[in-house]
Image (cartoon, rainbow, N blue to C red; front, side, top):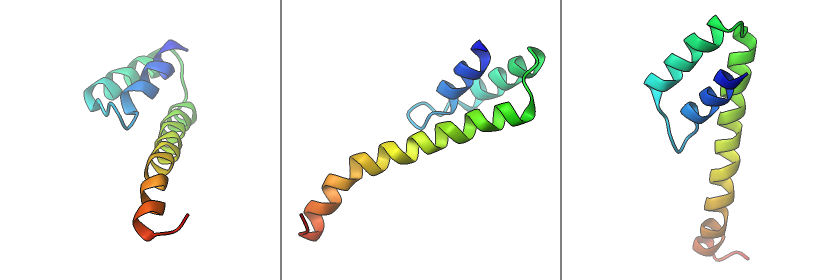
Length: 68
């Protein structure tokens, strides 16, 4: 479903377009998406953000603490 993909982009940590997220949630519901599907998409975007930031911060953390 296109609206769930658009919702993922709207809630991604690099975008955080809350008005766009609301619009895409409404459109996804109108297209037949369930509450669980919408929450799953939002959760997946959150997990991707956590993984991204842990990947970015990790090299800096090792350098700052003196560990290799």
